[in-house]
Image 1: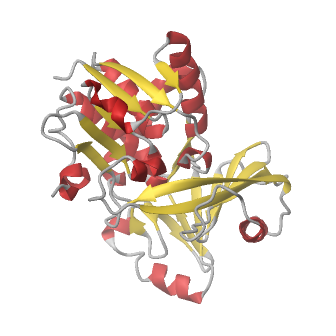
Image 2: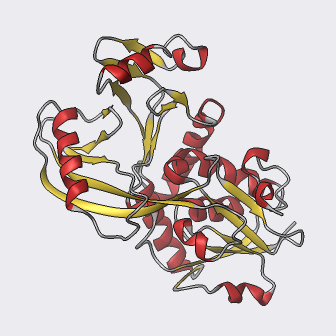
Length: 326
């Protein structure tokens, strides 16, 4: 068992890994330089049973969704407020091609169990929920800063040579500090946040883009994927696209007081997380590649990793960093 670990990065992965270690009696410290580039800046925290134009089952949703929610319920006692809420998900057909693609899938067993009803305009899905990841990260950051367990600032790779096992949870920045054997794929995501008076507070509408209600008329609209421009600047093109999506998905509602955010996501070709040790001595570890599914995957994988004292033997084989070792 590893008695102490250093965690670099306090996004959703680093936060949940630290909390899992704390509950397992593993000493830890976090080094974090802030969230200027983090995917958490554009993360909606939306967890859905099906994804994509063909209603593909979200990897491990059926097995993990309930346990992930339970983890957030426990964390609500830490932050003193609500973190997770159930949502109805309206998946709309944007065109005839989408209608045909989705319609052909509705009777598939892995899809049908999540379909509440279907009509000419789209389908209603059950089981979706949203996690307030930004609130969680901010609340735990403040708590750990006061406890002296979080050090704010940059962490250079050569600092890890002091012998303390170090786990990199740095999101898109992982490309600069991890072996090139992993084919990291980065994309910029942009979100529009504002108000649409009168919008339902418990219904997410999605036709490839989505409108997520935040309560009291506030909404978040997303999300764009840009693999060419990896700057952190919001673009007029994305804002125009998202404003159009807001109007389309809300039945013509004009978004008010809108502002844009941009952040970077990181993924790998097989669309699975990358978790585990890079060396047999367990000195250099990674917890990355969560992309848009971090709210579902992070709590379960963090617990799997901490459960055996960070040996990594209980991690899902499909996420193991070993699949990229040469």
